[in-house]
Length: 283
Image 1 (spheres, rainbow, N blue to C red):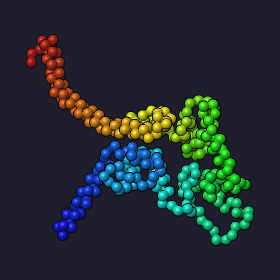
Image 2: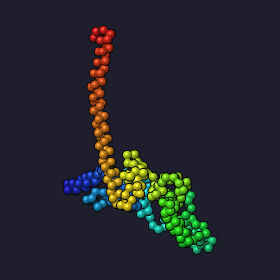
Image 3: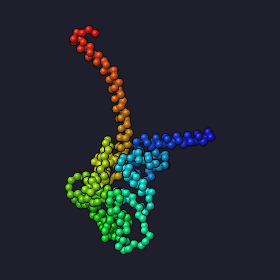
Image 4: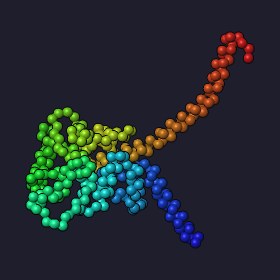
């Protein structure tokens, strides 16, 4: 009985220690962030000696709002079969239910037509594209491939068009900077790299060279691994320095309060004595 209880205590202590490290070692964020950006649903523990995966609660605790949505999407995607697909626009999952009877030629074309109950977007379940009335999936994909090829071509120093990262429509820039706003879904994104604009106080934004949210073409575009290493190191350094600055600020504030508690009464006493000496009043 003693050995059983002792074993449980050791296991509980190891679990608590592991949870504590995962929750509070802020240097873990860059590793989790990179894995989420790569579309991984199973996030490896950043501790090199550990071969386990992080639980869902821990990952959600260490991610900002936009990345939480992305992680939940990849997590849900890893749990479904081929009869369930996400809406191309809002990522709401829809299950396609096959009917037992043979459809008529008129209904065969619209068999895969899906209208999302969340955003009302109409799309094709078979090829996972916007609905293409009167055009089969193969012909639509061929036309879409030509469109993507044209959009990726460089003319006059820029792409012909860039795809909105949310609603996936192609947008062509005629003038102005790289900061684009989609006219359909109001998403802010970068025309050069196609990524959403993200910013976090103290960690920079999409225009920062050394920020993890920065555009990949602004800093070492030809050396992506070095770019991620440098930006991740800068982010980790800021995450480590921030608590030290906070503690230092609190310490200085506490010292100031203690000094004030001693200095203020002396100041009031001196002021009162000076006032009495001017009026000639005795103590």
